[in-house]
Image (cartoon, rainbow, N blue to C red; front, top):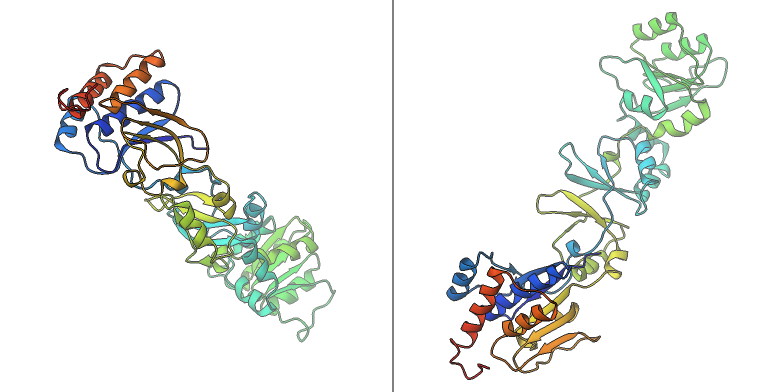
Length: 392
């Protein structure tokens, strides 16, 4: 789980709030915690000079305290290429707990989602619809699905997708519509010859049997594809109809989320869709994870340390949806409330960085030269070179 701590000053940053955020972030890191300094607005010229003088980058611009997808742990994405077979998709589906496969193109970009509903829906369709899907299946995909080997592939293979499993000894023209279809059988040269003569587009020999060389040549002469498989006819018949690709059954133009979207917005959009898991994309359109409703209900809020303020009208937006773990300030006590005890350091002094300097000492640490420069600069700035009435 992401334990990053955001340290931020008030909405109109001055040198004290910025230097306090940077130095307290340094203190947290030296105490073994993960932290990042933030700002809520543009820097003034004085602060820019201070940061440049003491070799510091501008703090992260952060104006909203709500948790983003990038802040939480989500599931790794389970991807499948659009040219993979439905049979392969079933095997991949069993390996993922969220029951969603993200379909990608040759450039690894999202083009669809394949769910158990997509895979199961096809099995409930009329035979004509299944034939139309199987008509798109490539010969090599059919062979791979039934763990077989292509013995002969015509130059331009095409079938009507209709599958016939032949178990009778003699074929009759009026009983089995074999023309341009896929014919599955085991032994029997006469049956094999009859199927080829009736215009079968593909002949599948199961149970580890082999087509004789003479019959193979006969099939080639009639432009009939041949596949041989070691598995039994019943098993082959059950899975051969999963040889078409997932791009024909996937949900196109799927709902997806960006990793910088806020969790509460994500949850609201999910209410309008029934997919179990959704892809998460980064700014390069790469799939970086999978998010479900579970993640939107069970996550840690962003953790914040507020420096140089404690008033609601000065703090970061939606702070009530974050977890405040500390407040360090030298102003009046504002109206921010927390749901649990926190580290609250409010001291009557001229500068927040004065308090942070004390915190370094309390932790047995000395700030380095750059951090010392920031602390001193903030003190000089906030006390107007020790002339302010708030100077202590």
